[in-house]
Length: 45
Image (cartoon, rainbow, N blue to C red; front, top):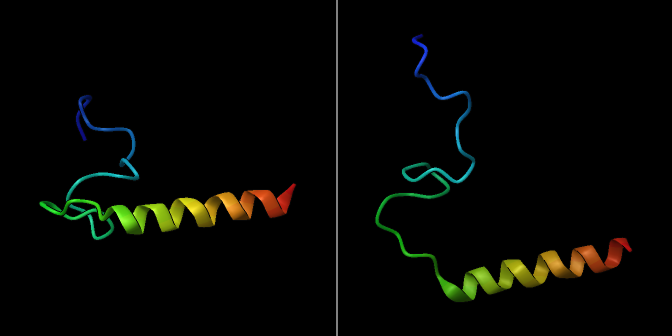
């Protein structure tokens, strides 16, 4: 490996299984995930 190699892989890199190329994020899916995360955070308090 050379000096110019990345030190880590980005968790949200384009072209991965979780974030494939050419796919626009679905807004309703995003809102559902955000609300679920907010509810989870509320329960932990």
